[in-house]
Image (cartoon, rainbow, N blue to C red; front, side, top):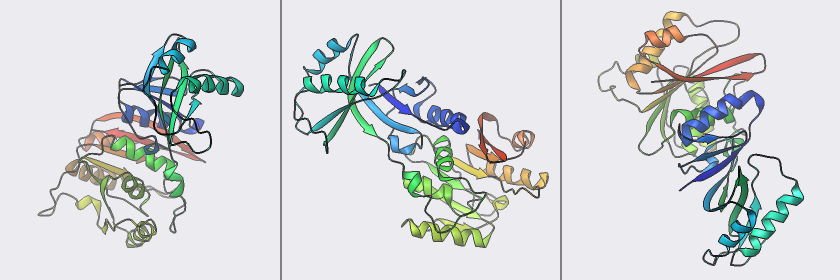
Length: 313
């Protein structure tokens, strides 16, 4: 089956958006300026950038041909509404409504414009017209902005959610760790997607703040106080994780010594097969010295500084 996704992002986060969607939708997905085509079925609400997913049922070379094929589909028991999904070109609103009405007129069942039980979408992609069931994304990350504890330099919830998806595109069975979890921004995004994740931080105040935030969203306490540099060294602490998300400690007035950064990266290599490392500094040499290979990266701008999102294997 083929799926068409529409997405939107701010210019500053375009590179992050594309990296996240490549991770979720697969390396062989086809991308346009505002859409992607993939064989993978992903819930739109997983991504902060996805707007909708169209599950392709019918394709045709013209709108009349598409309408004719839609008319052959089995009648719908649930009430429905047909919308137009913008993919390649900008389409006038009146034209969108005209196309949606034409297709809806041929779809057998009961149309309901206000509160339909099912949604369908139609779009023109290249020289082809496409129709199918439609699912909209929900801005889950937006709800998580309203947490009791915050850091001014913490990842915003939209970036955190994208980073989680880059680290863990396939949720089933994945074990994940955030070893510098701070106030739990990454933990909350991951747990809201059903990901098995734990967090540690050497700062007791940060761990306390993370617990307050987790409780606020009725999430279990998955954090503990620990120096990540000791991970994988103690007896019984040899657990391997499928993915690790590391937001390197930093502030704008001081710099973490290189030997401490290297110790952290070596610990990450000990306990995880794959890591997404977030840094405001150039640490490629340290990452490679720790035993990782850099697979992909992007840069996210925030006010007067930028973060690198580095995928390591």
